[in-house]
Amino acid sequence: MTAVFGVVEPGLLTTVQDLGRPGAIASGVPPSGAMDRFAHAAANLLAGNERNQATLECTLSGPQLVALRPCLVAITGADLGAHINGRAAPMWTGIFLAAGDSLSFAGRRSGMRAYVAVSGGFDGERWLGSRSTYLLVSRGGMHGRPLKAGDELELAADRSAPMVAGRQLAASMLPDYSEHTLAVMAGPHLKRLDMTSRKALLGQVFKVSGQADRMGYRLDGPPLTLTGDELLSFGLAAGSIQVVNSGQAIMLMADHQTAGGYAVVATVVSASLPAAAQLGPGDELRFRAVTEAQAGVMRRELSAALASLASP
Image (tube, rainbow, N blue to C red; front, side):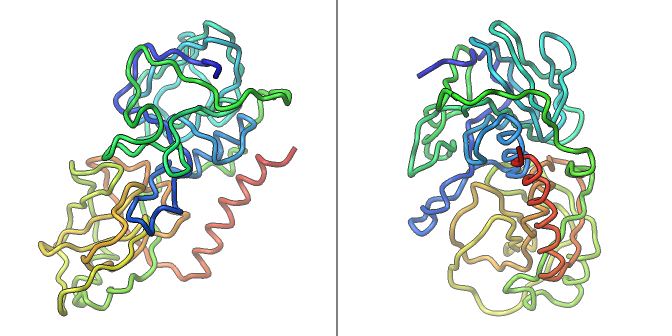
């Protein structure tokens, strides 16, 4: 294997992630993978990779890396103040690095998670068909853990095709991470909320609590009142909004449990999950109801943005 980066500083929480292991859900293994799948896929395409190659997911503060060989990288997602050799680096574009160049992050400006892709993709431990890091069981990625100083990151494959720097995602297609109103569709247990709680769910402000991680976000806000008998466990998906017995809402994210018995009153549509992934503790958000047709339009807009990068 070919080492491409040395880790000088690891950042707060930097992990190797791809698009996860959805085929293992039936066995009780969370899908995991990149929280912001749009930013992850865009970074890969800008670096000349397939969408499922592994990237680095950098949370809140990014790492300091030194290039061990010439390479092409792309940085997407949150603005964590990316710098190359001490100068501000462009986002959402392919960038050449020479051996010895330094990639670092000055600090969070907006969003929570940035993604670094390298042409050829990052290598890592495969578990159940995916290089994604699942921290709870210490599997996948860099030995199942976040990066640490002294690590060397290797390429998954040496690219024989020419690397092309300067490709960009059009400004009109960039996701609006400042939009904290998430589109939702009714969940299977919405009618278990009383009318006051239904109005609160779609009309009141919620705030991401300090209990927020890759598994899910506990939301501070109006208590939601449920009616009806206890539920049997059922399958769950990223974006599910559960209500626990105390009346608190929880929004499930990439490392969510695969089944549970708390009521699911709504589900964040896939096109709003990138914005959800960029929320952090203290951020306020709202939910707005959309139809299946509206959710489809939103999804197609994101697909069109990625398709524009896949075109030669």
